[in-house]
Length: 95
Image (cartoon, rainbow, N blue to C red; front, side):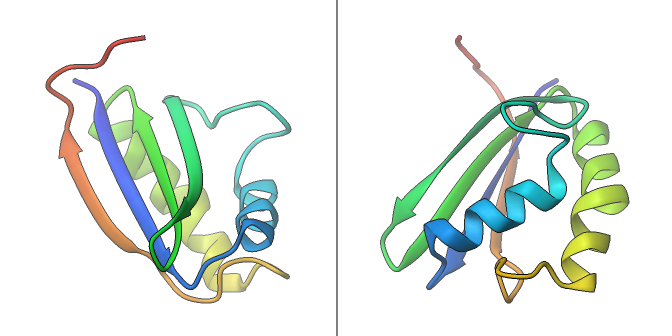
């Protein structure tokens, strides 16, 4: 079952997003293994990212193996603090 994660970075900017995504995604226009959707943009008070993975397990592998370790090391120009997170099992996903 697909699994969605919404990250909101209070005070986050486009520049911080671009630096962070460059550090955690496998390349320009490519998604991490298991991720099937990615959207991001400015939102009330900051920056919001929505990612959908093919399963909760693939999200956890990306989170624990790539995202958290790289953010804990610090990403130059990236988001300075962890996001507010909401996650849910996807009931309906349309292309």
